[in-house]
Image 1: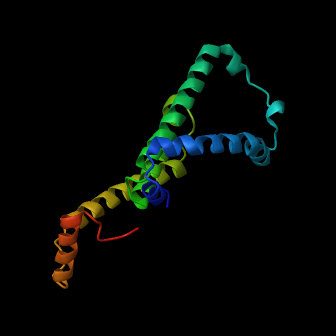
Image 2 (image 1 turned 30 degrees about the horizontal axis):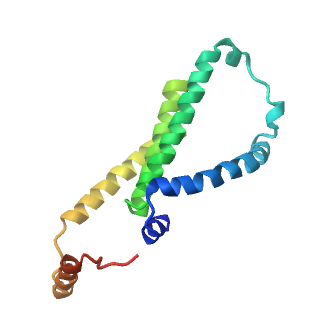
Image 3 (image 1 turned 180 degrees about the vertical axis):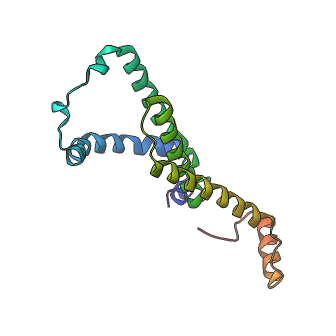
Length: 168
């Protein structure tokens, strides 16, 4: 639906991002502490920093900076994809992002990779491969012979006036 709204109002990805980012930031600031408390049972001011955070502050600052930069890049890339890809392709990209996050967490932060995580990533990658194969097979399939006059008429209309034979 976001892609159709983007086309309907003729707005670009970055304009959409600039309109939604402030709303997302305010909602995160207002709701984040309550959700955090619900999930962890601790309030942010009562959080106790471990000694590891104070041993190497430049390293901690570097990883916070990298994390924020990756989050901004992730948001920008998502908004660039909206309106250009189908909903299924967008979800496939989302699963790839999850696989990357889990892998980078394991490589950079020594987080635990459980059998469940590895199995989930393998299933996600297999699903992406199968989806790509199905899309390519669909592109290579010849046009149906039944009703081919209707298909030719729709394609001809598309060539003449540039309209899409299928509406959103």
